[in-house]
Length: 269
Length: 121
Ligand SMILES: [Zn+2]
Image (cartoon, rainbow over all chains, first blue to last red; front, side):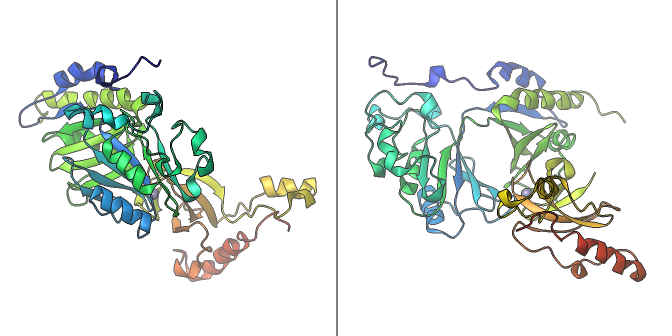
């Protein structure tokens, strides 16, 4: 174990829809009635719970550089750098690109880890403050971070934790107010559905009104598609992100491919 | 299909919610003081009115928050939604669609259902 120093976890990562990449490309339709489907794997997702207006919320805002969305359906930021999606009155989801897709952090990022605790399973590391603590701060020395001191609680860098998440964790650790930051990147995967017929495809299985008069770019909601719960995020006029839990991703991808089938043929007059 | 208004998300289909039973049924302050009969009443006895009832719902596919709703068991109309911890809204704010002569009897049924069953303390 001591000899196993993992410097690049990319070959080990496997997205929930890796097996369907070709099928999704084949199912995509071009032209006037076009609709395309692809997976955007390994997006960085961070669950944030803070009371809007609190100091903890201010911390999030200053670290991420974005205000918290103020209500249902709202999104701040963008897909290129970082976005914060409203999930509930005190719950938010930060979504940003996969850091490892560009480059992997320097080996120095492992500083602070006494041993090889940086296994991918360790990624869901929680910065704890106030009443949400799952283990008391006094027990931090016994936690997976080994000898990490109290200030470092939950902030020990891991290879699989996004630098932004680490920074958020550090900012929240030791905060007296009730708040938490959790790496949820593996919880959901992201599908991108785009094209002139994208909305028509979604409307077959989403109970919400997706018409532009009530739904538009920069809107994200939690709802159902087909039989399962997803996050639905419209990122552009004809582009949507659909984020199912990983274990439902194959179902959603197959549901979408099925719903896309008719657009490959001429419209029946 | 009911269209239920989540206090946080607005109107959503019934399928996005889960039902949590009657609202305002307080947990007994000291369950050990209850007789078996009283405990059974706390657990299983509900007002079951024909008319308005306050219920707990959770928006499980949306914001995942619990809230209370006043629903008419005759028409399935959701008359009001309000946050957990808030008192049951006065029915006058949400007049029934029935005629004036029947409104008073509906209100009586609704009011009696707020009296907690069991919950001796
Ligand atoms: Zn809701």
